[in-house]
Amino acid sequence: MDSDDVVVVAARFAYPEYLKRGVYVCQAERVFRDGLTHMGFYANSAIQPHVPRIRYREDLVNFTEKEAAVRATGSATDRLISEVIEVLLADGTREEGKQYQVFLLSGPEDRDTIRLAQPITNDTLTASGRPWASTMGQRYVSLAGLTRRGDCDQRPGRPMTDWPWVSDAGGSGWIVARRATGSLLFESCSRRSLGRRPGR
Image (cartoon, rainbow, N blue to C red; front, side, top):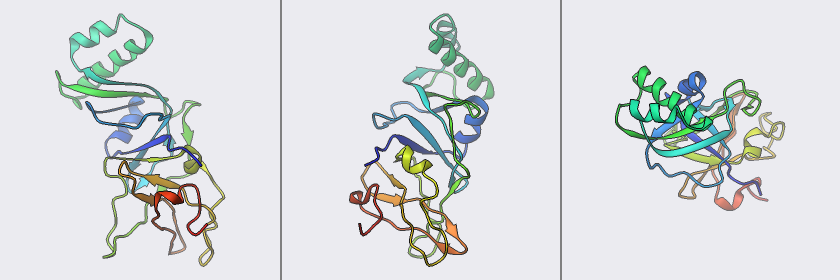
């Protein structure tokens, strides 16, 4: 059974920021699971191709010029956070004097960053036929399931042989798949289906 070691975050603004800065910064004291190794970005109705490694995470970071100056004389990690504080305050995307949670990530071109062949599109519809927002805040998926390729026979009328699993903190589940020639390849499942095709 694959472990859920990737957090997929809602990233309409965070994904462009990651591509530019190589970081993810969110509200202080936001809860994440232990044991996370990578981060995925859900934007434009798809999990985007970059899946960077989480190199360091720190909560309750003061975004002030004073804090940046103090960290600038510290360890290599402190110096990186100092740069994050200075750059994001200069960008005007974070508020001076507030605390944030900071993730230092491998960069878009870094060898530690996983590159998916293409975005994993969410084609899920609600019972009324409206698009369903797959990631509200954050969800979790195994890196193996996210990067596994060639396991899904996408020809219409043929079953999918694997079901990449994504769960939220509450334990409900959804499965990411792609539309194949107009055929919606999507099913929901219980947590017992983790790593298995429904019905196995």
